[in-house]
Amino acid sequence: MSSWNGYDSDDDYLPAGQRGRGAQETSPRWPFRRSRTLALVGIVIVILVFYTSRGRHHSTTNDVDWSSFAYSQYATDSATVCNAVMVFEALHRLGSKAERVLLYPEEWDTTVESAWDRDSQLLNLATLKYKVKLHPIKLLAVNGEGRPGTFDKPQQTWDTSITKLLSFNLTDYDRVLHLDSDITLLHHLDELFLLPKAPIAMPRAYWWDASAGSPPLTSLLMLLEPNPQELANMLATLHAWSEQPDGGKRDKYDMDLLNARFGASALVLPHRPYAMLSAEFRTHEHSAYLGGPPDIAPWDPDRALAEAKLVHYSDWPLPKPWIMWPWQGLKEMQPDCGGSKEGTCRERVIWKDLYDDFRARRKDICKILSVPAPDWQWLKSGGGGNGTAQGHT
Ligand SMILES: *[C@@H]1O[C@H](CO)[C@@H](O)[C@H](O)[C@H]1NC(C)=O
Ligand SMILES: *[C@@H]1O[C@H](CO)[C@@H](O)[C@H](O)[C@H]1NC(C)=O
Image (tube, rainbow, N blue to C red; front, side, top):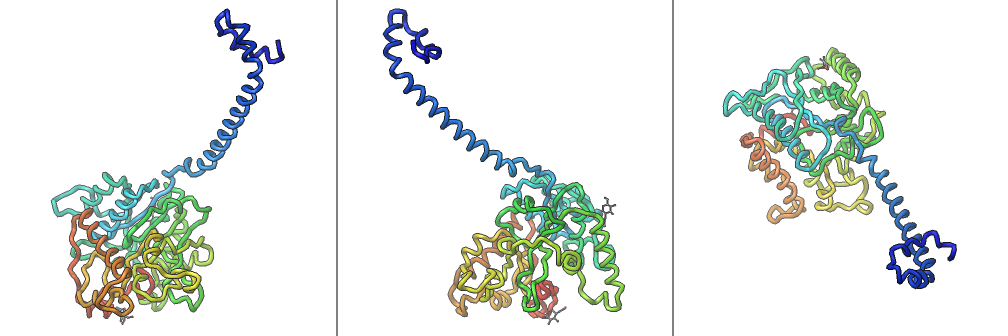
């Protein structure tokens, strides 16, 4: 028969009487069927190649060893351990894949001694529910070792904020993302772990007066490669500073140390969407945050909120969200809606929602009530600490 005879195996399956006829009938169709089959095979191959190459491309993120990355938080007292657990709850809820580490005072334990032993309860909640690894530490303070605070006598976080540097000691990980805990996380930040290698990556404190040059880096968010030598060097620098004549009075804290060491070499992260201040909703001047004048970057409060991944509570002299607002302070400080004290506007709604949301989650997760509102005049005179005035806490 014809050249394609070798492939004519169909014939074998035809009933005896129909064989010849079948062969004759199929013969004119075969070249056509074959080319159609070949075309189909070709299409399938093209599709397969397309998908496997796409798959291989994807696998750069799918094959990531997430156990080599961790978010870190530190606790110095009952307020900060709750804040830290709230951040871990958010990471858990938002589907973050990296590990979670809590640095906590070695003086604490996880034995719940009574129904009021909230610190131990929160440590247990963190490990059991939010898969947090506990890492006991000696608290660091500017003038030597710090002592953990209690619920009644909170630790001045300003003073122990250099404790965050201990994230450089988490050598079990290739990369650690330290976040301050007076924040709300609106998205997880896992994608940061996949950035090009760099000893540290931080955003700029965009809210600083930039007329003197680029704002410094903010330690609100630090993506670092653990390195005990960096830690030792920075502690030595801190010690040297405190030896200077007015060293004790000069404010030299974690942010100064980090800028002194990495100011010129850090990988700079975009502060938008990684580091927004709640105060952004109170200001009329958004060009620093948006990175340009209104014709380039118009302000839209809903769009700003939708894209933000991390909002830092910072509305000095109003207190942090776990402390209630003095009524007069709220009236003076809330977003002014273009001067109309009566009506409302998106800025005011969003700003208040950010605080309400924090307080509701704190009650839900930590089962502790807000601290009563301090006196407004006392707060205004700097009684609550001058963190934000220095572009920090
Ligand atoms: C860093 O970790 C090492 C090993 O666990 C420990 O000996 C050292 O005290 C830690 N450094 C600080 C400053 O806590
Ligand atoms: C805090 O800052 C305010 C305003 O800048 C200032 O008047 C006050 O004296 C400062 N207080 C402290 C304790 O530094």
